Length: 164
Image (cartoon, rainbow, N blue to C red):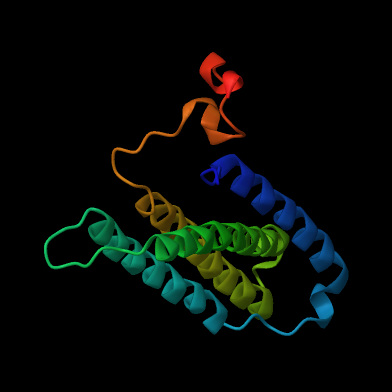
């Protein structure tokens, strides 16, 4: 499994921004206001992932007072971090799409409310992405170097291996 690439997250966010802007052009007038609690849910998830990352880093480093982390737990946290980073990129793109669409109509109360909620959502989505990338980094074993070739495929056969 390769580390999450930030350009891939940015591309997902940009695509979601464009799609959200197009959908809002068609449907914004019939949509209910954005719920403020949605943005704070992402903040709670970001705090949880950052805390898990801090704990996991201490367990992998075998600091005193911690028990070693089972390898399956570390693998699960790495998968959680990768998935959360993708979700955060999508949510950031949706919030940015709202911001782009609503930028011209902030004089009215409803669009201003939605712009504020979307702005908070954008900020918390970026925090969630940062926490997910931190958790993913905490899953690495210190001092471990990836095999030559990036760990993809089997290593090339040496002459001794061919004789067997």
